[in-house]
Image 1 (cartoon, rainbow, N blue to C red):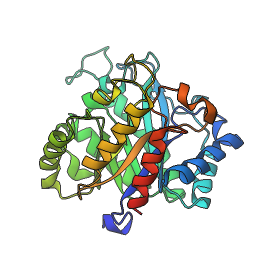
Image 2 (image 1 turned 135 degrees about the vertical axis):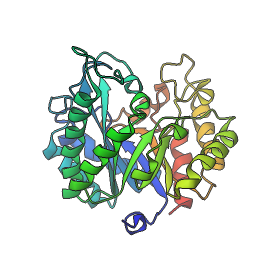
Image 3 (image 1 turned 30 degrees about the vertical axis):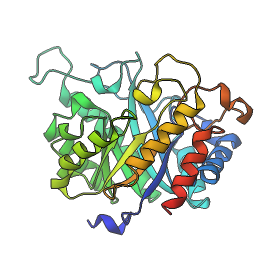
Length: 318
């Protein structure tokens, strides 16, 4: 596969859309209006549609992607079709959460099978079925890329299983595949040769971008593959620029803190020729009212100063 056939690799002016959307959400007129606003107000070219399957906990083996916590296949396809009408390229990102609130990075099992204990083989069987299901949709709708996992740190040591999963996905989906490792974990994945694009979550402290970019560049250089930050962003909250990955950090609402984080991130990472895009976090399918933007302290940028920072930067990358 020649990756340049698919993405150029053109710079990914990307934004994550629809995270945690439930059955029926994509059918609402507000969701299409939200996607239209995303393109119009941020100069986004790539929409990363991120889905959230569920498993009971970090040590359970059944991944549920059929329940009402997921948008239906039909409405997903309709949203992808609408993305095309808007001139957007689409990256499909099937992800998993734990019902009990445990972060997916902690999904883990014994490396040696033990009778009566949950096993890696059981979990990968279920997770692979999940990925293959959406690989078929990604192929049918000709998505520009597929992200087969996100920030699943403890699973990453399972080299053989991940390679097998990627092989199974390739049977159904012929486009480029990436895996979104977590911040600081770029060197933890030893199977980057199995994917077409390397990606990670760029939630790095505002004052540490130079160090982290130098570290990442050295790690990915031997693979000679495109790289982009499949997630990146910062809440509109005081102190968040120094720990942008901490969605629970307490602090005052601070629009300028968020906007300044984006300015610095784009100045540092956006000017590296090997950083070939961002999948910013995140844009809701169902937006709050714009007049309420300055009361929101989450990652959203709709109606906030950071929105203009993103729009101006993405304009330079078209």
